[in-house]
Amino acid sequence: MLSLDNGFEEAVGIVADCQASAKRLCEALGYEVRHDGALPMAAGQLLGLGGVAAREILIAHPDASRGAIRLVTPDGKPGSLMRDGAQAWDSGGIFDINIRALAGIDALHRQLGAAGFRAHAPIVDWDFGALSVREVVESDADGLCIALMERIHPPLTGYDGLGGNASWVFNSTQVVPDFDTARALLVDHLGWLAVQETEGPAGTIGGANCMGLPVGLAGEIRMRIGIYHPQGRMEGSVEIIAYDCGGTDFSAARPPQRGWATVRLPVTDLSAFAAAMTAALCEISAPVRFQWAPHGEVEALAATTPWGARFEALRLLD
Image 1 (cartoon, rainbow, N blue to C red):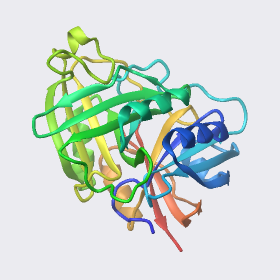
Image 2: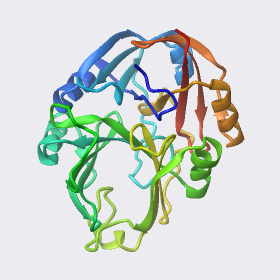
Image 3: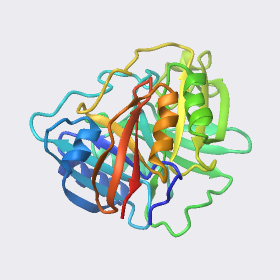
Image 4: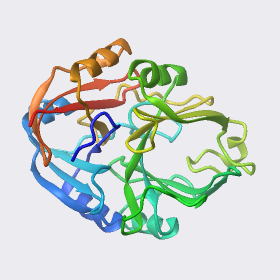
């Protein structure tokens, strides 16, 4: 059963060949196919595909009820990348999704490498005293970026009963040009709660970092990070990062270009969501109805933030 008003249910990526991408990701992550078929035309319009037909494949962790990945391939020649040529610190759109390595990040990293992903930097060990993690960020040829995280201490909780080496998708990151504006959208307008907020250097004491910043400069670059969720949990949460080093702005990029296109949030009140996002100066689409496989018929609309990240809100009608 879908969890309503509880963050995003799935991340949607536009790729050149959803069948090939689904096969590679299922082999690497241990996911399974939950749905494979034609993308409803109304869903394609919501996604920004216009009247172009498309195929969609939904993959998910076999033991999880949320945190899925929906891969969409429009008919015709593949488009360019939404963040074409972007570095990890460049703002605009949806940067990545986050998956936990449950039985060792090294093996999972190698599996994603075999699936065509390339890391932005070597695996990094972060030690914050009370918290120690290992992390690597990697992208494929479609611009899909995945961050893998392994908890070292304290022991990870909340993932009991999950088999395999990879968790479901629990978080998604957006690199933003203005932290306060992005935070206000999530907290002041949507009413989400802070899971975590930090500020500091972009690298470890030695300069190591997972984003590919120059090791000799990372310690001098400051970043602000915030993670937000309707109930203050890290499950379907949205993370925002702002760097003080500047960068290229990709906020104008839109589907049907390839990459992470949107996160989908099941909601109980579509009008309230639209009003909140309108007040936050988002672009709001007209509402549409379609079959959201495998969940049922929904009324949905899309809100695109000033920095080009897309949120789709869906209200179940069944």
